[in-house]
Image 1 (cartoon, rainbow, N blue to C red):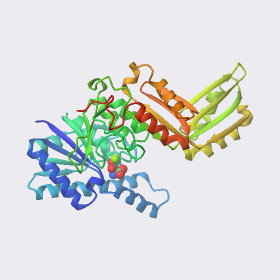
Image 2: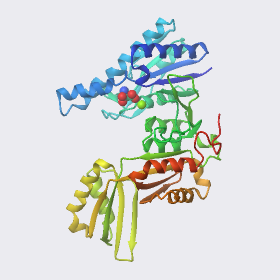
Image 3: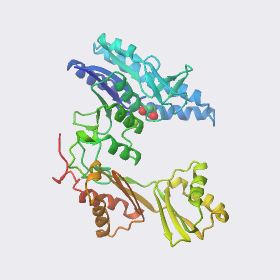
Image 4: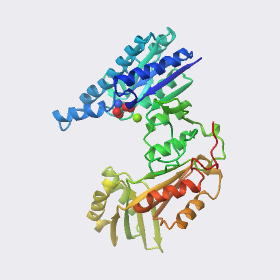
Amino acid sequence: MGIVVQKYGGTSVGNVGRIKQVAERVKHSVQAGEQVIVVVSAMGDQTDKLVSLMYEVSNHPPRREMDMMLTTGEQVSIALLSAALQELNVPSISYTGWQAGISTKSQFGNARIVDIHSERILTAVHSGKVVIVAGFQGVTEAGEIATLGRGGSDTTAVAVAAAVSAERCEINTDVDGIYSTDPRIVPHARKLSSVSFEEMLEMAALGASVLHPRAVEVAKVHGIKLLVRSSFSDNEGTFVKEATMIEQDIVVSGVAYDENVSKIEILDIENEMGVIADVFNTLAAENINVDMIVLSEHGADTFDLAFTVGKEEAERTLEMIEARKLELKYRDAFSDKKVAKVSIIGAGMVTNPGVAAKMFNTLAENDIAMKLITTSEIKVSCLVPANDGKDAVNVLHSAYGLNADSDASRKSG
Ligand code: ASP
Ligand code: MG
């Protein structure tokens, strides 16, 4: 049997009792004949606590020192888990990021993994030990300790899996898989047996916080089979894998919802070459991320521009546009915070006509207005009034046959 990488998140190792439970799970895998490498996060909300501790000392913490401190969180959990395994007579050894050979770029707080020298891990695995690797950390070329960005232990796990050519990478977490939508909004949300990397990336970017988006990217590039499952049960999880391996009859896999959006509108802008670039350069210079963009011309002379930004950026965005009213030559500009973004996501959309039409029909039949629309190959997003947002998710979820009790569309297994 091959190597399996198992990642356990902060909740899964939140206290000593849970660490012992994780040790039992790992022991089961070992008894089943698997060679196991474990990647762990810091215990519970330890990383948050360490961040606050640093801010008690400094309002502008040096990034190097912040990383120096944050990496201690994972160092505690690897040592405890390894000791817990040895209590169960399972041979094991814990490694920090540098001991595991994880090299990163030299960017504190958001370093990317460039390479993993996996000899040390593999030697230990081949000698029959469970190897436990600290998530979220690596070492730069200059020998500095750096972290991978919040949530980065997922990325450690996938990168290790790629480096040792693991059979699969399991993300053991506090939910039991990826759902067709947020179960807090739609009680009938169903757990998906599989999603494609592309769908997962769209869902992660739209706020499904189960997986670190970079982990999905690394898995996609290296063709790593990812399994998202619960640390607390033996329920089947969700596989994240190549779209070609998934049945093509599934048109829409999930409905995503985002309340953190605001619409900005600029009306009657004089149609001069370069003015649109000018608007967005102004925002880019202030690091404001723009999402949906719609442009509509009024004959040749003027046009309207509408786009969305994060809610907390709405005021600042409008101020910047108003401050440049003379150069940008428009009649009026305003922002609307009472909106929400609803998106349908599905790899099968590319080859199935009528998916967007169904979305618009469904919203219209339910008297839900659409304020902006954008599409990609595997996603259609509509901006709707905030009051109607959750209803929109519900009606779309059932229109595409995604409810757990409906027999449409989704295969099992
Ligand atoms: N402990 C780190 C964090 O809380 C990394 C992780 O858990 O993935 O962000
Ligand atoms: Mg996480």
